[in-house]
Image (cartoon, rainbow, N blue to C red):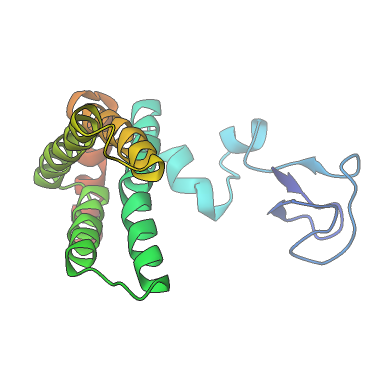
Length: 187
């Protein structure tokens, strides 16, 4: 949770009773509310890391940003895991590395506001998710338990990601905001 340190007066993320900014001990009762919350945010006293989100983005764009981050994480996590396990076992797969590289590139383009990347990702996620679920349905007796569970869970997750990418009304608002922001930065 982000709170203000009583010693250095900085907004920091406390995971224990030690301030990561100054190193002093600060129990929960001694800490204050972070500056970016409450009246300070309305007065424009937001810290740098939340300033753009608090001042320029509306609620729909913020939800679209959260959805985009969640989808990127859920789409890339199985691919990163697959390649990490392959590297650990010294069985590196060219197809796995290629899938990770293409997916990471498409996710990067999506984060930057590319509409074509959104459509390519929902089609790929839907195809992969349906293929995983169909594999479970057709070959459930031939699959070992780990593959069965992986195909079932990641298939359902990929189908959910495809649905959000395809049908979300918040995501296009975020992508439009990102495209506009990038245009402003370049000009």
